[in-house]
Amino acid sequence: LEVLTEPRRGAWIYSVCKSKIFWAATCSSLLWISMAILVFLPIHKHVDIPRGPTIPIIGDWGRQGMPSQRAVALALSMFCEQKEGGCPYIISTGDNFYNNGVFSTADPLWQSSFENIYASPSLQGKWFPVLGNHDHHKARWSHQIEYTKVSKRWHFPSRFYSQVLDFNSATVQILFLDTSPFIESYLKPSAMPTLRELGTKDQLGWLEEQLQSSHRYNRTIVIGHHPIYSAGSHGDADDLKPQLLPLLIRYNATVYVSGHDHSLQYLKSEEPLAGGSSTFHQFVSGAGSSVRPFAKSFHRKSVFYGGGSGFMTVTFEDDRLLIRFYNTDADVIYETEISGQT
Image 1 (tube, one colour):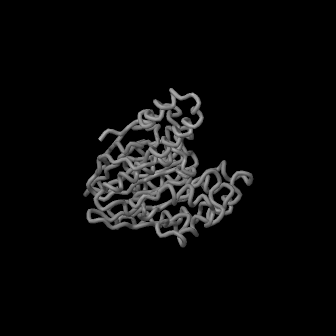
Image 2: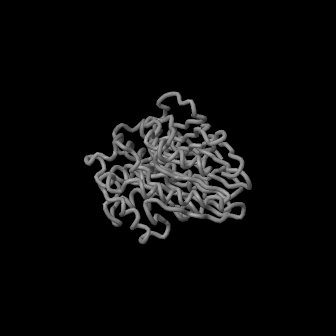
Image 3: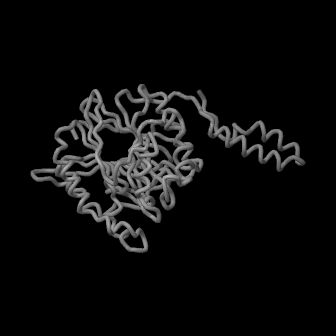
């Protein structure tokens, strides 16, 4: 099925408007209205869907429905509608509400940036979010925790938490982190006043405790907002490297997914480990709304950089992970496999 482009969608109105100067203003308005309606109407097309249990991951999305956010939401809904069994789980990598988080559980942004945007029946599964730096700005991050009691699908029990998911092919441990307290530049009182009081000691202790028991599961995936490695405009989060990375490598938690940089990325590195090295996989899914189309500079660990809006999926298939990036047409723009237990 052909997906019509924007100019063709409004062509019939344009052909009328160009010959009726008197009605130019009215026709111009009609043109924009028709564009808006057609952009947000469901478009049915075949989506390339993986077979195994799959979790979509979307980040940096909360912009009150700006067109790129709606476009990603539409593509995600098409994916979930066609996925056998739907999407019972969706992960958010943070920056859920721009620019300054939410100020209560009744903040209008809950409707304009979340409920009304991801309203498709196929997107009503459980959402597992983390906090981004914008969620820490002026508002209290705790309101996003409290919304768990309001919403049937928003599952956010704590700033950092663990979720174990049982699939037929695997039992998966997913660890959700709050990475903003690790970023030194955020700790200035004028930047994010509550971060300094949160600290990182308790979170690191909790993370190591969780990783020590990760051998019980087929897979362990770690989710945080800030990328340890990134070819995007923000670059590497150097403050995470000495504190977080050694812990992940030590316990073989070598798949880390983040947002923050507004792009879709895959970076791979060989990290030192006693007696040898370990392959570390960094994925960035921060293209849920606005994007930064071009990489900041060459990054020697970069495998893929996508500068358009979209989302990521993780599929659990026997002894491998299948990772895919989708654009706003719900087309696969990149995929890779990670074999072995991680």
